Image 1 (spheres, one colour):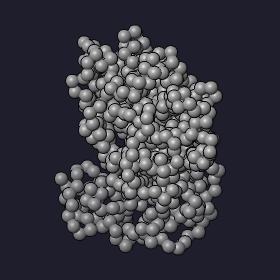
Image 2 (spheres, helix red, strand yellow):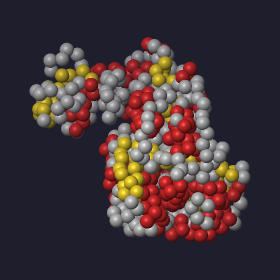
Image 3 (cartoon, rainbow, N blue to C red):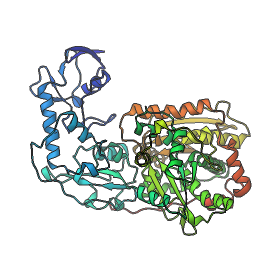
Image 4 (cartoon, rainbow, N blue to C red):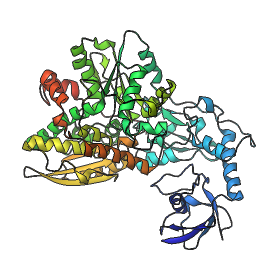
Amino acid sequence: MINIEVNGRPIEAEPGEMLLASLRRAGINVPTLCHLEGLFPTGACRMCVVEVQGQRGLVPSCAFPVSEGLKVQTHSPRALRARKTIVELLLANHPDDCLYCVRNENCDLQRLAAELGVRSRRFSGAKSRHTLDTSSPSLIRDPAKCILCGKCVRVCEEVQGVAAIDFIGRGSRTTVGTAFNEGLNISSCVYCGQCVRVCPTGALREQSHMKEVADALNHPELTVVVQHAPAISVTLGEEFGMPPGANVDGAMTTALRLLGFKRVFDTSFSADLTIMEEASELVHRIKNGGRLPMMTSCSPGWIKFVETFYPDFMENLSSCKSPQQMLGAVIKSYFAERDGIDPSKIFSVSIMPCTAKKFEAGRPEMGRNGLPDIDAVLTTRELARMIRMRGLDLRELANDTADTPFGERTTAGKLFGASGGVMEAAIRTAHYLITGEELADLTVEPVRGLAGMKEAHLRIAGMDIGVAVVSGLGNARQLLEQIRAGRKDLHFIEVMSCPGGCVAGGGQPTSTNLDNVRTRIQALYRIDSVESRRTSHSNESVQRIYEEYLDQPLSDKSHHLLHTHYSRREVLA
């Protein structure tokens, strides 16, 4: 360890780390606007400047390495003046519509202005005026609110490997935009929403479906049903001041009923249904010489990534719809027939951690008889806004349970919220389908954790099955290039667009803290460890829908309702 002195008191630092990391570990809050944990620091925003003895000027703590005997002042008058001036200069050009902004009271720039005591306008400048980009089905881009921190550019290029946006222009005319400054809808954007998750202001946000949902809830002739994804219950609480990983499943169900939804379903049920189809498809491909490695298909950002950048791998994708779309399909078929409801009178809503789910719901192949499987998608953030709008506090609500026939789940379905969860659930069921026996240990440790790429080789009925789990599209690109180059030892690959999986999706609470992501994942693992039903094939409601309606996995009816196809996409850049 290295000994340094901060604000007159000694603290310990790790050799080779940057000063900002040492300060935060010691509980000293130094603000940043451009810093992204895990990426090489740029020091672009200069908000984290501190005084270091022996240095003539202020230094950015995010890019200043620690050394033995370093003496630092983090909140000296000089450092505070510099930070305040930076915020004042940013506000000089920033729109004054905070009361109408979706990030009001949850904006880093607004928070810093309050913390630094900015109470009057010291600098005046021309307000930023740019055209609002509403072309994407998932995202809205408002360049007028952009403060050029560069976080969206970096996460899109360095983490996701997509590079749909970049800096355009020079000097005071610099903006962030797409190629030729055209709409997101014709760019290479995959709608994952990671840019929204890291944006410190309202420059990037989701396309809201709140009005459509509110109108449907007030429509006297519609039966409005809702499903919620596995990751929502361990993240929604953060929007109401609860600690990361707090499981609010029961209170959330109560809130959804109070909002007016006629039926509340759990997408973990259709995650179990997805596993029955996907594991059966994997076994069929292995036994019958199908295209391998088979790749999961439940992450719509990943699907669009393949369609855009790697169309030669489309045949490797599982033909299974995602759990969202599977549940939407059986709601407007099996459920509608069972309860005698006209499918055209059902308005089906999903609560998802993912902005790309809005795009997925609008895909033309995701429906039948002229009706979409899903009518509207709300992110975790949108649901929190609707709950607050009704004057409800999640912390004060009693617990309730989801409705039949789509309320029963196993922990295998719940694991879909974490990177590796789909793989673990699929391995449990594939092993059973091949051998007729349960895995000796249902916990598949090698595919767990936050690492961006995980691999394992499993022995099942004498076969060596190679599997890989990837989260973050930049990591997916690396693995696809390995396979293109001739790698042949893998049979099954899980890919999640967002690093860490759905718990860190683009529709989740805006936080870049990796510890929060780890805590959410651990909450899902904890659910899996304490409950008894841990395999998708043990879900009795899933068994019943096959007996009463679908016949069996991969049947003609299952293919018609639960499977889909993909199309190559041509984009501008």
